[in-house]
Amino acid sequence: MNKKGALESLLFVAGDDGLSMDEITSLLETTPLEAQNLLTEMRASHNDNIHSGLTLIETRKRYQLATKREYAELIKMYAVSPFATHLSQAALETLAIIAYKQPLTRMEIDQIRGVQSAGLVQRLLLRGLIKEIGRSETPGRPIIYGTTDYFMNYFGLTTIDDLPNVDELFQMQDNESFDLFDFPADEDTDNQLAFFKTDSVIPEQE
Image (cartoon, rainbow, N blue to C red; front, side):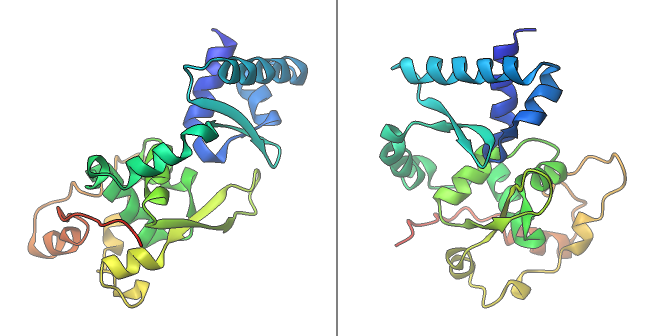
C-alpha cells in the first residue's frame, strides 16, 4: 500500500473533521515521525504543483485537505451559479438530516446516510443553508452543524418545530440500510418528504 496515497484518501474522506496525528499513525500503522514526513511531503507536493487546487492545512492539531486560497472566489461563484442552482437529492437528504437531527457532526451525518458527506456539507455551507454552531466535546472536537435563518426563511418556517413530523423515518434497525427518500408510498410520507423534494431554484442569499 502506498502510504502517501492512503493518507490522502483518508484525509479526503475525513473532510472538514480532519485527522489527528494519533488517528493517522493508528490507521496507517506507522510512527509519528514517518506520519509527519508523509504530511510534510504531501503539503509540499500540493503547494509546489501549480496544477493542484488543494493544499494541506493544520487546525487545532488536526490535518485536513482544503482548497487553495486563490480559488476561494471561484468556489463562491460556483456555489451561487446556475450550475449549482438546484440541490441534488443527496444534498437534500443531507440537509433534511441536519434539519431534523441538529445539532450534529459530519461523522453523525455519515453514519445516518451510510456514505461520506464532506462535499455535500461544504456545498450546503456555501449556500448559507447550514452553519457551524460549535464543536463537540468528543475526541477531536469535531464541528457541529445546524440550519441557518436563511434555511428557515426559504422553507417558510417560524421555528424548527414547524418542520413536518418525520421522527419515524429515522427509526432504523441495526445494520439496516437507510435512504431518506426510499420509503413505502403513502399519503402522509409523500407529504412529509415533498417538503424537501423541491425543484424550485434556491436563490442567492443576500
